[in-house]
Length: 63
Ligand code: SF4
Image (cartoon, rainbow, N blue to C red; front, side, top):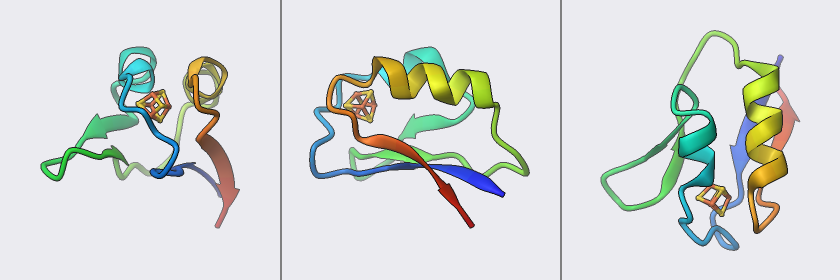
């Protein structure tokens, strides 16, 4: 199964991923972007978030 991952160190908290795909990305209480736990992830939405992330810090991982 493929899951999206965010590399937090380059993340600038621009919010683009949340805007493009609010069912996958959210801001947690610690002020970091986190992936919402789901049974599966919408490929098109996550690919859009990857495309629009200005820091290139979102990627797919096989688990
Ligand atoms: S789009 Fe990229 S840089 Fe912007 S908040 Fe999301 S993960 Fe961080």
